[in-house]
Every structure is written in C-alpha cells, then in structure tokens.
Image (cartoon, rainbow, N blue to C red; front, side, top):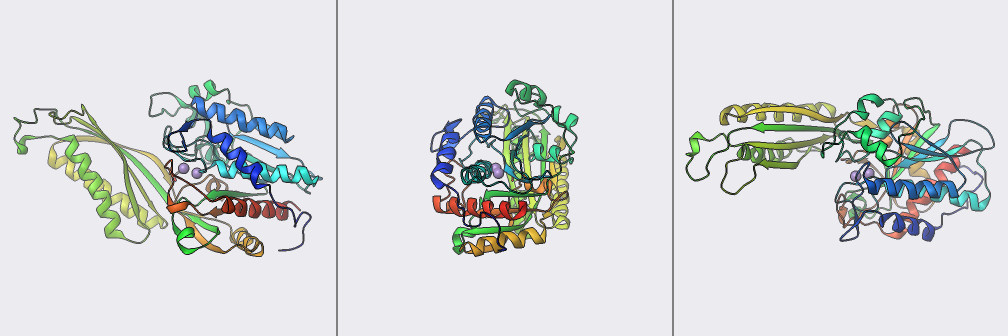
Length: 413
Ligand code: GLV
Ligand code: MN
Ligand code: MN
C-alpha cells in the first residue's frame, strides 16, 4: 500500500455497530430481521434516520428525482468524489446487513476522518440508492441504474408495484422525490462494501472478498390462464390446470440449472394460484423465474429453454399465457486496477483475502461502465441472506470497513 495520509487510521467498530442496530429497529421483524421494502413507510423512516446522521457529519446532501441520496464531504480541491454506498431497502424477509452495511460503513469512514480532522484532497461521498431489491417494484438496482443513466427516470417513476401502487406516488409519499438530475453524476471511482450473501468466504476461511464480477440476472413473470373446475368431477385429461403448469415451471427451472451445471442458478420465488382453494382447479397462476449465470451466452441459453418449455406445456394443457421481463442485466466485470487495490489493501491490513464473483446483484454494477468500480465482500454466517437469520461477525464488519476506509483514503489522496 503506498503511504497516504491516514494510513494508520481505523474505524470505530462500536459506533458502526450501534448505527447498524439502530437502523435495524426501523421495520424490525421477528428473528432479528428487517422488513423495509422500497418506498414503504419503514423505508421513509430509515431514510430519515440515515439522512439525520449525514447531517450530523456535516455532509452536503442531495436527493435526486428517484430518491437516491448522495452525501459529499468536501476535499481540499474540487473534483468528482470517491464514492461509496449501497441501499437501505430490504426484501420483506430481510436481514440487517444486506445493503445497510455498505451505507453505514461509508458513514463510519466519514466519522473516522472527521474525528481525525483529516481532509482528503478530492471529495469523498456516501450514497444510498432507491429500490435496490426490486422485490416490490421491478427491476432491482433501479435507483443506481437511473443514477448512472442506465434507465430512464420517467419510465421508472411509472413502474407499478406488486401492491398496485405506482412508484412515483410511493416516492412522493416518502417525501424523497428530490430535484437533483439523474443520469449525469460522475464519480472518480465507486467502491461498495457488502456482505457476501453466500457461503464461500466462511467455508474457505477468508475474511475479505475482492469482487471481480457480478453474474447476469434475468427475471421473467408468467401469467397463466386456464379454467377453474371441480377437483372431484373433472377427469384428468379434461383439465386446464394453471396450478399444474406453475408447478411444472418450477420443476423445469431446477432441471435446467441442474443440466446446465456450472454457475447456472434458477429460482421460482413467486407462485400464486387463483382462486387457491383445496377443491378447485386453479384458473390462474402468477409465476416468476429468476435465472442467473456469469456467462451471457449461457444465460441466454437458459432463458430460451425456459421460454420454449412454458410455451409447450401451456399448449399441451390448453392454457394461455403472457410473459413479461421484470429485470435483465448482463454479467458485469469490475475494473482490474480497483480489484487489485481491494485485494492488496485487504492483504496489507492482515486480512485473508480471495478474489471472487458475486452471485447477487449490486448497485456497484451500475457504476462499472462509467468509472473504475469494485466491491469488498465480508463473510455471511452459514451463507444465509434474504432471511432474518442473516449475520456477519463484528470482526468481519471491522475488517470490511477498515478496507473501505483505506481504499477511500488512497483513491482521494
Ligand atoms: C438483488 O439484490 C438480487 O441480487 O436479487
Ligand atoms: Mn444488497
Ligand atoms: Mn438483497
């Protein structure tokens, strides 16, 4: 690590943990988890708390048209900021670390510099991006994609959520429909600290992951329409059973992933039947398919296989269907220089470090085409995430936040 001002500085773990615990109280659910879905009232209260901390730290805060919040700490010279950040929205069954760790570690970096009275040469900043999860309003990584000009803001404000609410209206309700323009913000570089959300670091005894890439993501929603009829009187060959086809899609998703092997994963996370009664053949089903692969060509192969299967089984069962893409992101590679810097910084701080891909989507991937970008992973206990049991050891949080601090110091010196 080249010598930079602040090289011996370390974050205050207790201060960071206190913030993580305090934010986790907003939307707290049984088991120590959090339900703070994008643009819900809990999200609003979480935002207010984080923005309060940004103010206390003396940062220049801006809110853009889709509710992304960016807080900047000035340098001795003007310039594009060295930016970190992540998200504070959660899935409905979320843990307390997914996203929030990256945001609150960014605040902790700034608190550490404030306390040391150290001003970087160029500005540094921390942001949180609207609707990273995409569980209520698809697609995921929406705020960061709009921020970096990947998606059009007007189009995203019109997205209808799973509860029928329009995103722009939900955003207005939170009071975070800001005025800062989207699609034009340029960062000097972007570094996101995140929990791994998988088992690799823990299983192999590593403390830090230097993330090299994010796999491609494909979300499709299928609406299947058959005919409701009596469960006891309708012969099997005369059925148009949306429930059967929904189940067959889930089985096929598993089969495709198994046959393709390698990195291919497939998930049917939503399968709802209408009318959903014990003695009635379902006339409708809503099914979502999440396919991911580190290879774009293989991801396309999986998509084609699934699309062909759905068309064929619907025809065989006498169902009609519609399909809609909810999210589609190609695999992303991070900047080699930034990846090396993450690995070298972590190693020089004494942490056992490996390079690895990310299985989950992240806000950082939206920055990757526009500025040097990388991510720092810390272990997830038992590889569990999107679950109230999500947990990361305090010492791993310390490790990740210190790597973030030293990276931001080096990039802003
Ligand atoms: C979003 O964060 C995802 O990976 O599903
Ligand atoms: Mn996340
Ligand atoms: Mn998540």
